Amino acid sequence: MRRVLLTGLIVFSVAAVLCTTWRTACAAGTEVAVGAEIYIKSAYQNNADFDDNAKDDVAFTVEEVTLIIKNKFTEEVSTTLEMEAAVIDSANGAVEMKYAYIDVGHFFTENLKIRIGKIGSKWELRKNYGVPNACRVCDFDLSLFPDTKPLGILAEYVSGDITVNLLRGQYLEGSVVGNNANDIDEYLLRVEYNTGKGYVNGYLLYWNDNNSATPIDYFTIGFAGRHAVVEGKMGLWADISYQTGNSTVATDEFGALRAWVGTEVVFESETKPMVGLDLFYLQGASGNTKAYTQIKHDFDRTLIVESTNWIGFLPRANQGYTSVQGLAGLQSIFKGKCEVMLTFTYFTANGDLPAGQGKGIGTEVDGIFVYNYMENLSFVLGVAWFTPDKDFAGASNPDPTVLAIFNAYLEF
Image (cartoon, rainbow, N blue to C red):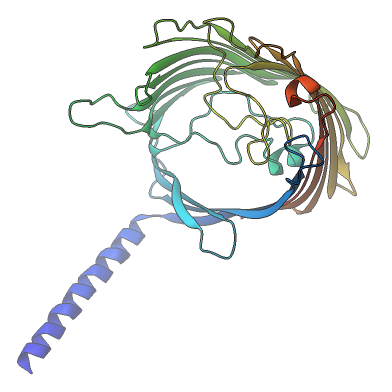
């Protein structure tokens, strides 16, 4: 009996200590905020093989969930945890850590702050023109579910209108005994100037891949910017970068260009009609000179051809392409409750192509309707139609590819 009482007393004492410790830890955080993003995506797609006679239609529904927990300890110290899960059917989705980092302000100096942990890496232009919610909920907004989330440290120094970011991140830890460099690492320097009507920035990216069978390094220098010619009515944007590098393959040569420029005009009206023009160029391989490599694979300007979530025909390995996209839409229907966007995009290949294959790729038409039930809850219906060129399809009379999507997105 004494032994039972003694054991119970020990268990109770340990539990009391743990509870006290837990309460103390919780009390240390001055503010705790919990949020979530729920993204439900349904799609029907057909003729990805460009042949009506071969059955290849497929319909599916997936859900992506992100749980966000922020804890603010002091004015200068906070933590952020973001966990995401993909759910395909009635099975439980596997939860993975999306972000987990510590923010520290006034690090040595008043203007310097650091972020350390599993962080996001963004250096290229973000697409938020056209019809904003259509871009966001259809994943045209590349920041919705960014692909690159390295483990590392990001320093940010702000002085007036100038912001300097320096990042060292690791995408793959492959170190083994005898080979301590078997990793994939990124180093990024980005300097941005706020012009008052937009921004301009320059970035230097070094991507070191020692994990592949043929280790390779990429060096990218780029310049990007946005400018509001007339605030809320006309805007310009551009992102131009050049890539070089080296590899263990003696015949590899580097030197490729990537350019993305565009403009939009919004007219004065209750429905806010807009038109835009978007030009994109990705240099392909030429002889031993490698094509421009899209290190980030979530470049989405169309629902079919360039999509990450759906079919995604381009870019094909070591081939480049040029595209011209026209946009038109209404940004505010029924007092902002609804939005409509229509795009027409023409694609053509560049660089070395297989023998006998021409440069034709095809054209795509996307139509998107958005219903904003409230500020943080949107529903989207999208329909896309891609008409391939015979060069791209490898057939004299290819059938078009069709896609229909229905998305629901909630953040709170």
